[in-house]
Structures are given as structure tokens and as C-alpha cells.
Image (tube, rainbow, N blue to C red; front, side, top):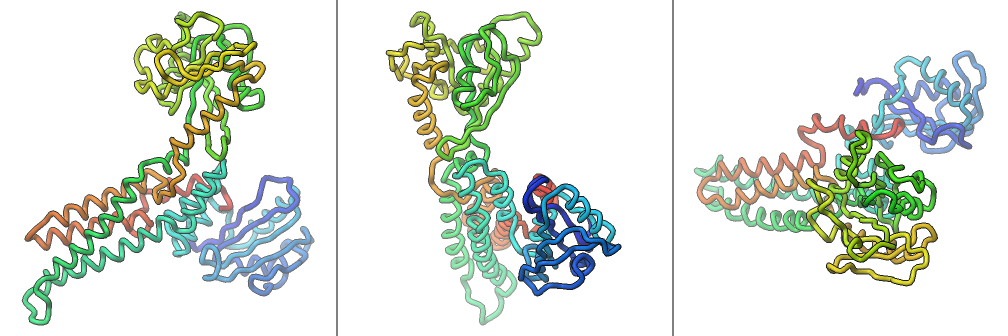
Amino acid sequence: MLSPNQTIFALSSGRAPTAIAIIRLSGPHTRDAVESLCGKIPPPRVAHLATLQNANHESIDEGVVLWFPGPHSVTGEDVAEFQVHGGRAVIAAMFEALGKIDGLRPAEPGEFTRRAFENGKLDLTEAEGLDDLIHADTDRQRRQALRQLKGLLGNHARDWREQIIKASALVEAAIDFSDEGDVPDDLIGPAKERVKHLLGDIERVLATGGRSERLRDGLVVAIAGAPNVGKSTLMNALARRDVAIVSPQAGTTRDIIEVHLDLDGYPVTLIDTAGIHDTSDPIELEGIRRAKARATDADLVFWLVDGRVGEAKISPNVSEWGEGVPSDPDRIWTIRNKLDDLTDLTTTSSDGQPAFSISAKNGRGLSKLTDSLVRFASSHFDDEVSLITRARHRTLLTDAADALGRALSMKEEPELVAEELRIAIHSLGRLIGRVDVEDILDSIFRDFCIGK
């Protein structure tokens, strides 16, 4: 990031043209910019209608100005917002006028949020929650991100860290003042008792599994099978729009096609893959290689077959996959397609695995398949509220728990106990972004939008 002594500005609303465009400023020269464009500083936190002018006193637009003097602002700095008409020419004129004011420059991606973090307005888990909220595609993702933004994990981490610091103080006192008459003989015991309760709390959080982390990325479902069994038709039917080319000619799909769905609030990425078959065509071979790789990594595979052929062809012939075959049979659902005159509603194959009979062309049987997919997603994600939503959270909490466990296992080494407690404090500090996190800040905030 560039110098925090500079004032940044950016468009914080949608892409032009829009009805209203919001241009946000933050930094030490914000007051100068507001005075330059509207002639005076409006009352704090009160919407003020003004005619905005450039340095040549030429009118740009009539808009609303909001003034938030620091530190009582979203970034902790002086902040202003200009709400103007959202035409491209108006926005361009505003940017030109702001760019000519000394000390102002366009903001980098995520710079407003990073300044809020650096000024103590939110911790790192809350900043990550804001990023997740911006990128949420479904209602369940939105609710999870909002809980994190409100401090779901950060508040617990701060409390745990404070408790460990208190326990560490007892251990340090036992080390430094062991020969003082007014210091109790046993300070390690109460410290370890406190640590024991904290370790139990953290271990319960870690035991919730990784389902909340999965909700951020969504469920990945790969549609696989031989050529010309209706994979693209099924994708279009589930997406309810044409996202893949459908043709009676085998081998139409040669590359990976993805579409993102919202199924009852669960995010699902549906992947249409190339037909798996023997071929010498190098392009088809690459498509098949990619299809196998994506299906192997998917959470669920729809193995599509032509339901008009014999029973022997119904079960997924996973031997065709060669290396990289999905090892978990529960991740493979057999789908008998092209049953346009659907009478057989079979939902299990001969080997007991889930199987469905459908006609992707006319939609028969799709509701049963969709309902089953929603139930699978529910079991995959779980609706239980978990504090952990990122792998980073789990790693640092695990580091803290391991250090606390080692501290509890030590008998007569108070210096080593103190060191393990320092490690736990440091891990929780990294979790909320209060110590030694410069190496990860750029990677987090560069994914934000400009103006956020």
C-alpha cells in the first residue's frame, strides 16, 4: 500500500451509468477536498445538498455531501462521500477535479478497509467477513459472512488471548519473583487451570469440522460420462438457461464449462465435462484429462448414462477412468438420461448407490434430482454456526491449541510453560491481525473491490 498520509478517493457504487454514484474519500486532506468542491464543510453526519464545482468554479453537478470527521468514521480518518448523478461524464468530471487537489490520489483495491483495520475499526477476521459479504452469492453465504463481520470469531479470539495473557502473567510472576515473601508459592497451578478451560473451548470450536469453510467456496458437482449422453442438456436444464452448446454430434464439449447455482441458499458450482472415451485426437484427449481431473476433485459426480440401453450399462463404469478415479462411491450418482417417456423412477442402482431416471430434454425426474442435491448440500455444509470460516482461522487456532496442550503437559518447567503460552498468544494475535501479519495483509486486501 502507498502512504497513509495521502488522501484516497474511489467510486464506491456500481459501474456507470447508474441513478446515483457514490464517491468516497478518506485521509488527512478530505476536508480540503470538500471545501474545494462545495465551498464549505457541512455539519458532521448530516446530508447536505450542494452544487459541486471544480477548481475553475465550473459546476459539475448538484449532489449530496456527507462529512464524517475522524476518528468517528468507518476508516478512523476524515471521510467524505459525494452522492452525484451516476452518468459517466459526471463521474469523470468529479475524478478529474479530485485528482487536481494536492495530496489526493485514487485508492487501491481494499485500501479503505485496510485503513479501517490499521486504525483499529475492525480486526482481521471482521475484514475477511466483509470480503466474504461482498462476494456472497447465496443467502446462507451472506448470513455466515455477516456473523463474521459482526465479530463472531474475533470477539472469542480476543477474549481467549486476554485470558492466556492473564495466565502467562501468573507464570511469569512465579519465575521472576519466586524468592519474594509476598508472592504465593503456587502460581503455576491456577494458571494451568485457566489454560485447561481455554483449551477446552478452542478444541470444541476446532471439532466442528470444515463445513463453514466449504460454504465460502460452495459445492462442486461434475457432470461426467461418455460422449452424447446429454451432459450439456442436463447442465442447461439445471441452470434453466443455455450455458452449454447442445448437439447430437458426439464430442461437442471439449473444455470445462462452469455455472454457479443457488440451490435453497447453498452455493453450487456445476461443471460440464468432455465425454470420457477412447480417442487419438489430441484436443479431445486434453479435454478428457481435464474432465477426469475436475471430476476427481469434485464433491459430487453425476455419472450420466443413456438410460435406453441395457441394465449392464447403468452403473458407472469407473474402470474407464483409469488413474484418478473417485475413490468414494457415495460421491458418484448414476443418472439414467434420455428417458423421454419416463415411467421408471428408480433412485438406487444395482449396487445400492444413488441413481436417478430423468429426461433432461423435457424435465421429467429433475425435481427429484434437485431435491436430493439440496439434501446432499445440507449434509455437506450443515447449518450449525461455526466460528471458523477460513483455513487460516483453523491453522492459527490449531497452533494455539497445540501450544496450550504442551503447556499443560509440562510439570516442573515454568520457563517452558511461559514460552508455550507466548506462542499461543502470538497465534491468536495473528488470527485477529494485531501482531506480525504484514505477510498476509496484501493477499487479503487485494481481493477487495476498489472503493471498499
